[in-house]
Length: 363
Ligand SMILES: Nc1ncnc2c1ncn2[C@@H]1O[C@H](COP(=O)(O)OP(=O)(O)OP(=O)(O)O)[C@@H](O)[C@H]1O
Image (tube, rainbow, N blue to C red; front, side):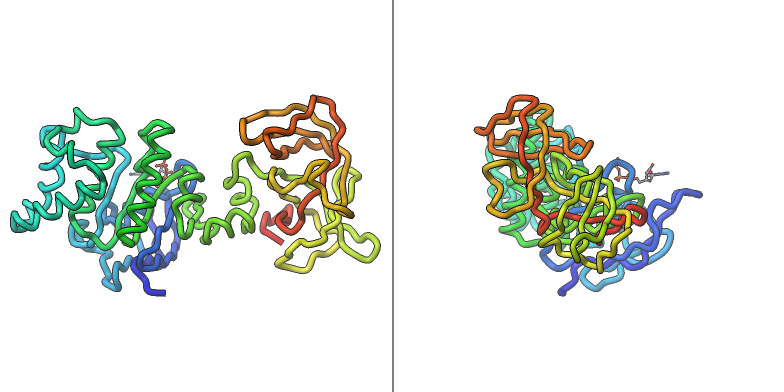
């Protein structure tokens, strides 16, 4: 791979607290990489190390094959977009865009060209004479992106750029950022705790927990083949269903058993040999369980009872009881079930996940 950013054995501690430990990560030229994790997992710290806003304790950072570990932020070829916009309040939008270039003594004609191009790409031309206070949150964030854009950087760094916006605007700007990446093809590293942003924007997602990357893969692999229980539970809304149980021998093959109910594992794509006696957790996403009429001929089905339903327009989320456990199943919004209804359920094991109960790793 043609590497744009390379992080080697990076560690960072604040006093006695180690936030990042021996972290390695290669980001390809033109890639959209999302750092995803809950609050405090170290994703902003990692981004700030790449930006040069924090000194690393150990390790090295390369951008375009150049060791930038101890370079000033301005010399790294990066542009950063923050959650808080960080615009100069007393300057017009135009001045906010051009100021950095003027300080760098760029010729006026070139500055004008770049500002005009950024304004066109981000559709902020009519706002150039306004000050930040006269803009909406979404417009301010466009200006903040424009400020990185005019600098013509190799790598864009985004730190939760959409967090301060309301849900509708967030969805709109998410699409714009994706469009921006498709047209510019720059390397982009994007920090978020929002799994929808991660799944929709990323070429690859690095999911972090306690300063350690848990899985680095394309969104569909992360969604369909989570490496461990943490990733499986973090990605997906509504969450994946988890059943505690164990593997057992039945009629010459290994099945999963839980609460006295046996589930055949036909179609399961195991990474390791499945051995009877092992304590495991079965994970099944709500849309990977078929109900009644959706069950194919000859498919193994189990009796369950509807507890409640949550109609959401396009989808209906059924909460059911099976083998003494509660699970959720997503069906079409037009299909309705009264509480107490008896239904049949079939699990699609080809897209299910099995985890070792002790190590929590995928089997
Ligand atoms: N200057 C600092 N001094 C001490 N600890 C810090 C400092 N900055 C961050 N930390 C700690 O480092 C850990 C990682 O912080 P970081 O901001 O990278 O997390 P994050 O995943 O980006 O979370 P958030 O989404 O809340 O910003 C946290 O436990 C935080 O308390």
